[in-house]
Image (cartoon, rainbow, N blue to C red; front, side):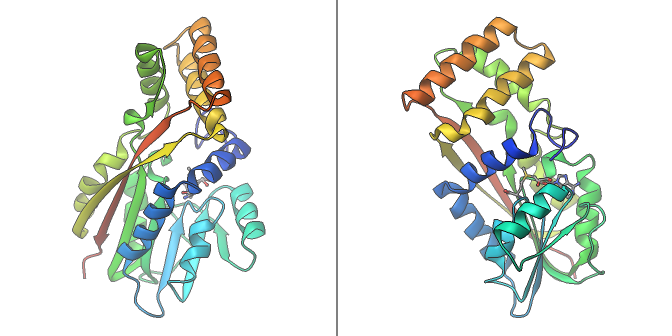
Length: 255
Ligand SMILES: C[S@@+](CC[C@H](N)C(=O)[O-])C[C@H]1O[C@@H](n2cnc3c(N)ncnc32)[C@H](O)[C@@H]1O
């Protein structure tokens, strides 16, 4: 992923963060629940948009006749193909999917809509590729509500909010329901859970929050240094806690 997609994080760092995230029980539960909510009929085609390194595409091949992964970043597409040989992953934009009208019975996008310049355009494209009665599932975190344990709570709050503001749509997960209703989807349901990370593999992501906040001017260099050294010490002492509220919204395309 380039800087234009997610500020301050390069593809390698993002992949390590996603790997740590997808290993957590909450993320595994959320993925499994998202597959159930797609309610795929036998022989279905499903598309996972913003598929990253491809785990969901690989898992979806057990639920669908044809699972297609789509990602804008060629490095992600290459990583997905190398991790899960044989899966169908294509480089394309969420607003211009390589599928025909009504070709898919399922559409899934996990941790994607917050980075899109125009989420409504992506939803319109979802409507185009979904068959009438097809199912959509959106999943993602609410960036404004990130929880980080720290002895410096006021500084942490400033860092979390400043980091959230570097994301194009930091609160889109709480708005999935409205977005889906506004796009004409029916039977909209929303579920929520929390992913909790205590693993040192999350340190680069946590440090990235402080670096992003520093760049926005929300904190000083000295504050960034003090906060990063606290979080690094916590990781060394096994005292890290980073938690993300996750939302899952499912709906049906109008017939
Ligand atoms: C945070 S990652 C999530 C990856 C994966 N869905 C997961 O849950 O692990 C977001 C992914 O969306 C991709 N992406 C960003 N903008 C995109 C766009 N306009 N169209 C398609 N994919 C996009 C990125 O390259 C990245 O792989």
